[in-house]
Length: 609
Image 1 (cartoon, rainbow, N blue to C red):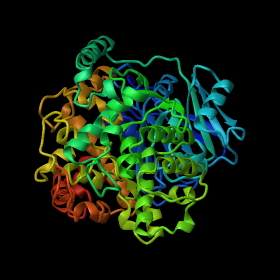
Image 2: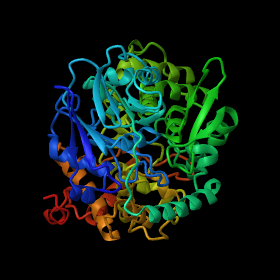
Image 3: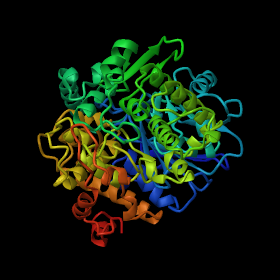
Image 4: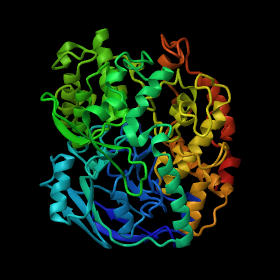
């Protein structure tokens, strides 16, 4: 096989058995890799009704055929499991250097089953595998554990691990690799913790076989040249200000979620925007393997109250911990971001859950006796304090650790949780960006923009601009972008591959760049139609899992605040999200019935019946 290593590693944590398992070439072509492979294995091996934190759950870590090849942005891997936050399938994506080392160790991925009797970590060393005791690592932060594991294995290895949040079962705990890169969403770190799996260390020095090395090299150069020629002029300005540059864009469109989504604009936005982060705290930008963009931020804060150094924050962190909590103290946001990375917390859910708690407190629904301090809008010290307490599940942090929906339900007001399928939203307000609301509601993992991001065309005009306040006709284009996301995730590319328009104005197909990459790498001779079919197969297979897990049309939903309460001010003033109208059309273009179930005909076409 070319592009693939041709094998997965299967690790039974209960017995300690480790064995290599051959990949089926037909499955590879049908599901591509990454997210597709993970979805395939979950449907084959996991009971959709299994308890997420039980030993019955499985974890699939899967690379794509372009991971580690040197393809532009080809640095990603997916962590797939059943989420403890949502109860749904989840696919949490991360980059950095760890995925490339995993691929170059000779593996396309790892499947973990069962639960270890005591804490362990997995050491993968160029085809040699060992489960080692990790009692001494339990309780360490992600940074401490990474350094310790590297000292015990190989200084050139790469590590993915959990922190105290994953060990203690925080429902939005992340898996951190390379210290500061996060497979962040849906509580994948809590599943790893429930299995007593602290870390995976990998050293890989092998080469990845390509079907057409010269063709791949020539095409890769052309793509890299396209990126590098326009890096600073990309719609997001990613190299200059990182994703933090998005603050100015969402503010200008009136879709910057503020005060637990009560507003779409934030008066203090200039204090937390990307240029401010760059001017005050940036040390240097950083890149994942094979990336010409370099959107990562290496930062340092010298403020004595919030001193620290690390990576980030990203836009989503800034929205969730800043405007959403009415906090304009960027130093506090950066410090809370460092704490989340070290303890292994999803920054989106952390900030959004705290914003929900602040509204509960303001309305008098959250008794003062339940919290150690007042949770007031704009309090940066409370943000830092609560991030730490949530990671260790101390005091009120133990309640925050359940996520905003369970917390708000506990106090009798679940309507104040800004979630879909119990997962907190990223930073785009659907009243000011209609298709994003549809994407949130129909995302297989709950509130997410990474399973298809309409902000590209609604806010940034990639590949062509569409009115963000218009809801008519958005179902088809949302579906197309979800298909594109599925192919990108499965191939092992970063979603920012889509920032550069490599395919013209046609949203019906993925960028042809992915097609050419895949064919020169794998030799599988995909047609565009087959690639689109593969994306449809992945999405319908995820939907099949959701339905078997008990989800239905009622779960393709948004909070009433977004669909019934008009935006009070700003460019989107007076707007609500027209989800019901878009959802009806969406089911039709997906060839699903009125209840959101794929038709038998559609499943037959995709080989999923």
